[in-house]
Image 1: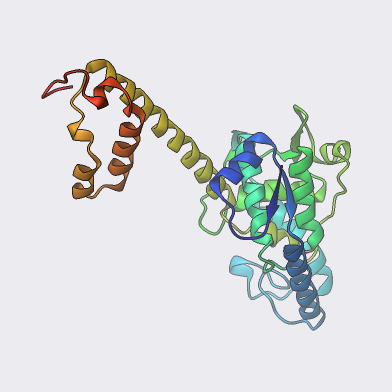
Image 2: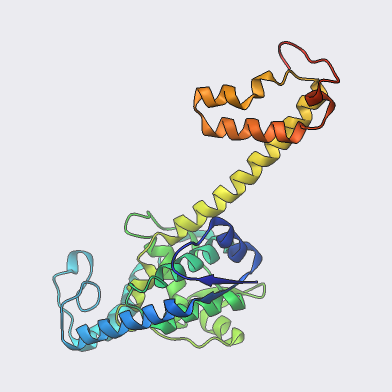
Length: 277
């Protein structure tokens, strides 16, 4: 099965399937057209020397510095070098893959100004299993996960490192073995790859998915325990929890009642204790 990325409607389950289970991804054709249209507009503005932050100006405290044509060409590369910092062991691969699919989804909106080949290369990396080496620590998430996303962007320059078929390789070797052309970075490309909180978003999606599964497992264990203890099921009446107003408690009460439905405890064939269990 292939996930069609449209720029909207990306679910937690879809992120998990790509990040952990290797589901293939593909850009929706209308999304490709939006990316192309935005890039054409950007290049016209560059040719007209219209001032645009992070394209023909510096960033941060250097935002008032205007770049000449030669500097515009090199700026995106140096932007990535400047931000590709981190410490600690490698971030889990599912975090990195989740961040990549999230960034592709952002590009699919058609407002990032990057060249289509940049997004398509990220798609190809996901589909062929090239996962950039990203340090576990190095981002504050304030203006995007700049450091970890920059380590992903290094692969687009044929630099950095990446995991491929169980090996940690130099970036250019990993891309070469996978048969992926290195696109390089032109005006706006680097900023369009790194300026977003995609790592934190991917981690949050994975955590929420796992937490939901843990809750379900806890409810199953609770239901089995209640049966074994011949418990009083009155406290698990959903209407009681609706009065208290906690939606999670209502959901759990309904789930537990659903699991014991049809059993002797629910049908009243066994006596239950009034208190405690």
